[in-house]
Each structure stands twice: as structure tokens, then as C-alpha cells.
Amino acid sequence: MSRNIVLSVLATAAITTIAVELYHKYVTPTTTSHKLIKTSQNSQPKQHSEELIREQLARNYAFLTEDGMTKVRNQRIIVVGAGGVGSWVATMLARSGVENLRIIDFDQVSLSSLNRHSVATLADVGISKVDCLKNHLLKIVPWINIDVHNKLWNLESAEELLDFNPTYVIDCIDNFDTKCDLLTYCYNKKIPVVSSGGAATKSDPTRINISDISKTEEDPLCKKLRIVLRKRGIIEGIPMIFSAEKPDPRKAKLLPLANDEIKKGDVDQLSALRDFRVRILPVLGTMPGMFGLAIASYVLAKVSDYPIEPIEGKNRYKLYDDLLQSIAGQQTRIGKTDQRVQISMLDVIYLLEDVFRGKSPISNYSTRLTLSRWDSTKEISLQNVVIMTKEEQKLHEKRVLIGGEPLEVVYPREVIELVNKRFKDEAYFSQFR
Ligand SMILES: *[C@@H]1O[C@H](CO)[C@@H](O)[C@H](O)[C@H]1NC(C)=O
Ligand SMILES: *[C@@H]1O[C@H](CO)[C@@H](O)[C@H](O)[C@H]1NC(C)=O
Image 1 (cartoon, rainbow, N blue to C red):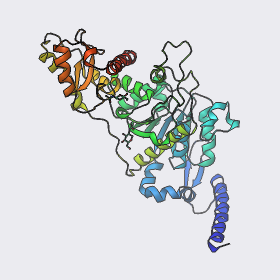
Image 2 (image 1 turned 120 degrees about the horizontal axis):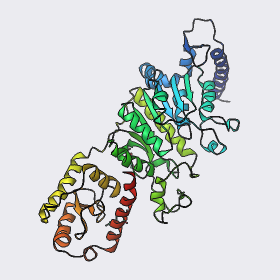
Image 3 (image 1 turned 90 degrees about the vertical axis):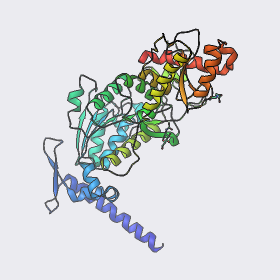
Image 4 (image 1 turned 135 degrees about the vertical axis):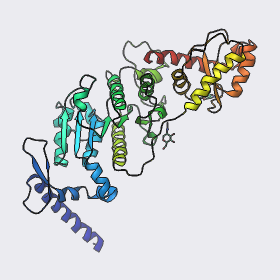
């Protein structure tokens, strides 16, 4: 055996001995000169040695520094939703030193959740998800103040359940309406919030992303959130974790509900917008965990002022305004000044970002964009305007809107089909607006 191996074996043995000692010291505080801190999650306050806590968090202290760790330890974080994503968030925040955690979830651990949960064992099946986490976390970080609520968060329970002076709320809810309400609530109350998109059907770790909600793509849950939140005046300002992995016919998909009227072909994009909870979603267990770990990393960096790329919204108000002006200008050019343009700024954002996905259906270009009436025989409506480039608009006006040529003569069949598909999508999304 080389000298290095001998040393490393000795070191490992020493660490094991220390660890066993440490565990007993946490549980049975000594009367030595260790500085003691009190926690009060039970009726009898336990005392924990500060020196041992620092030893357990030594790597984090080395990383985030004394200052950063003081901030981390003083956080008061609420995790709403303690499933595949939330269990990892709570576990890693606790392991990383956050001392005040509130966890809210109404549900119980089920056998099928063991493919993705951070700590649940077979013995936990049937107990509440929040108690499961509390029991396990107290074995890892016995000094933390962990306060759990086996309740459904909703607008009625909002005040009571968020009454914790939170420094951060982490949304790991999978029910659409509740999620939307939690985000609206935190946004309006200016409570920092981070939210998790959908991990179901996703499998590519390289596409996991954290961005402002206005920049999310390829996640039907985020898309529906954008549309509904905008109606409540929230356009950007909520960081989301999501996967930008594109759907692929060879990959797992969301199955339509029984009795669902959605026709085959629309399923990939649209069925995901239906109720999320009633179906068995295909979930690769690693993905929710990675979402949770990404959120925990992001929050730890944020709260400790560790350098991290800022998350900014699209901030495309100038473009939205230009688009609105462009269709009004077109009405003047084609001599239809009597017809008021019944399209608002929110409509423009929705059309550009959600219906047309930021690009012209004619060329796929995404710069020098305008908004243009499509079929000259129909009134302007959300299903008769198209995002196109300035050059395309000029040609469209000359040939279609003024020249009166049929769309079929001017555009290839694929373009007309794509535009009609976008109008059909709009008809579907409009029910959420
Ligand atoms: C994801 O993150 C990167 C930045 O790291 C960004 O450039 C990219 O456009 C993001 N969004 C999507 C939808 O992939
Ligand atoms: C635009 O992109 C789609 C795929 O997203 C493709 O099917 C279509 O042919 C593209 N159109 C042009 C004009 O490049």
C-alpha cells in the first residue's frame, strides 16, 4: 500500500469516528465550552453545538464564506409542494444550512412517488409528504426549525400558510390553478418567488434552464401560465425552472384524457394544458430531482449574494409597441382608417410570443417584425392577423390586401397551413384568456 492510500484510509476511519461522536453530541448536548444555539420545533427546546454545525457545513462555509453562510442560515424559506421537485428543494436547502423551513403539501407519499422523491422510503408510503420530509430532515440537520403543514395551499389558506415572514417562496405545485394563484399572490405581495415548470415527459439534462417566465419555451405548463398571468398584469418578473427540450414523436408524451375531444395531432401541444393531476404522467424520476436541485442552487446563490447570472425578462415593450403601430399604419396605407384596430398591447404580446412563437410563419425570421392583416375578405381579429417581417408585409399589402390576389396564389400551401394552425392554436389558447 502506498503512503497516500494508508493516509487516506486512516483519514476515512478518523472521519467515521468523528461523525459518530458528532451525532451523539447533537442529540445529547455536552456541557463543554461549545457555543450552543436553541431551536424550538418541539415543545422542549433542544440545544445544538454551533461548533459541530459549522463542521457539518464546513464545505458550504468554504464556498459561500462566513458572510454568505450567515445569510443562508438566516433564511426563512417556504416550499409549497413536497413532491418530486419540492422534496429535493427542501432537502438540499436544509442540508445547505437554511435554518427556517416551512413545507406545505396536502398529499401523502404513494408507492409511485418513490421513483423521484428525495428521501421517502417504503415505510413512508401512506404518511403525509410533509411529515415524511420533516422526519428525515431532522435526522440530517436536527438543529433546524422545520415547520410543516399538511394542507392544501389556496387563496383561502394563503394568509395563514404564508404567515412565516418568508424570504423566499418556492413554488413546486403541480396543479395549474393553485400554482397560478400562488405566483400571483407572491408577485403582488413582492415576496421573492421561484417556480417550477413541468418535468413530465422531459429527459434531456442539457436542456434544463432557469429563465424569466417571459422567456420560457417548450413547456406547455409555462405557456399556459404566461397567458393566464398576463391577464392578471404579470408579464415578466418570475424566475422559472423548466426544460426547453422539444417534443419528439419517439419520446414519451402526455396522453389525452379519456373523453377528450382534442383530435390526434393536436395532442402533443394542447392536451398538456388540461388538468395535470388526473392522469398518470410519464416522469423520468431524475428530472424533477434535477429541477429541485437547480432551484436550490439558484436560491442559495441568490440569498448569499454569490455571483450568478441575472434573470431578466424579455423587455420587448418597444417591439410590442412597434407591432401595434405597424398594424395601425397598415390600415392607413390600405385606406381602411374607418376601422379601428381592436387589438390591445396584451393581444400583441400574446400573438407574438405565444401564438406565433416570436417569428414569421412565412420565413421563420424573427427580426424586423410587423403585425399584418391576413385575409383581406375578413375583419381584423386575433384570428386574422399574422406576424411577418417588414418586407413580407410590404409584399402582402401589395398583392393580397390591395391587389386582391387570393392567399393560395401568393403563398405556398405549407405557409397557409401553418398560419391556419396558428389560428387554431389561438382559438384553443383563447379559452384561458
Ligand atoms: C436557456 O438558457 C440559456 C442561457 O444559459 C439561453 O441562452 C437559452 O436561450 C435559454 N432558453 C431556452 C428556451 O433554451
Ligand atoms: C420554418 O420552420 C418549420 C419548422 O419549425 C419548417 O417546417 C418550415 O419549413 C420552415 N419554413 C421556412 C420557410 O424555412
